[in-house]
Image (cartoon, rainbow, N blue to C red; front, side):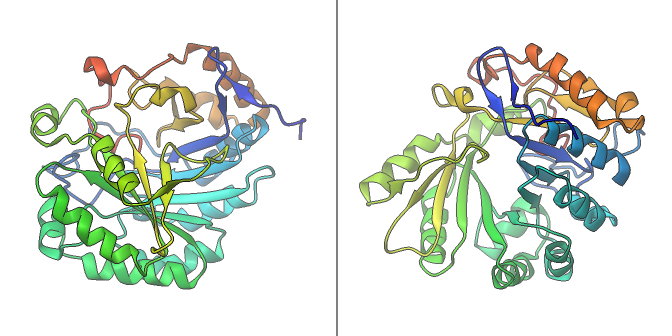
Length: 327
């Protein structure tokens, strides 16, 4: 293996974190993402286990320390444990994470842990079972919470993602705060982002994360330092709570300055930003199985990364919905 490099773009940002989508298929129908359910828009095959190994190897050569496997819903891949193992056994990779809706969590979490999973992110937008069912189209919140309890028993660092929605936000915040009193997870509030498919929904439901952040600070929550391979959240702790709270606020000033992650789609396209117009197709290079060659190609393309996502100007790029490359 060649000596590890650090991947850096033309704006001085370094990239330690790869988000690798293993499928764009999802079985949920969340109001803000896929309200009509998943609709296949292509027939391109997903990356194979061997191809994901090549991708992860290439990024590890370029300084990547953390790999997050995402979707769509990654648990819909029967070979997901093999992909976890491939990531975990790649030299240079220190942490393997998964983002999931948790639908299959109780039946799969032990296998994921045995294959090397370090961190789990589960999407739960409400702790009210009826509201959860309305948002997602599935009445399965108790089962997901059981899976989270098992993940914690196994020692897996667990985070819960909740999209901020203006209607009912105060009630949901109080429910989450009560839960965090005794539950050692990190709850991450994520601002609703505008995509090509949700413009009207965004206009009527967007809530700025700074409003929640102000409340936290006023109530004694304290900001933690951010690790090099951490995601975009600003995390807060409180001495009276077992859990933490993070905020992801893509509409805030200078949000993109700390960007440290790149994305590969389930079909092998490099997305330099969540909101680029189109991915850069690497599939033919990936198929050849040479991680060094792939690494050189990624290095050559990183100079095309823009300084910002330009969400503030209403730009959504080619992102019709977040299931395409996992958010």
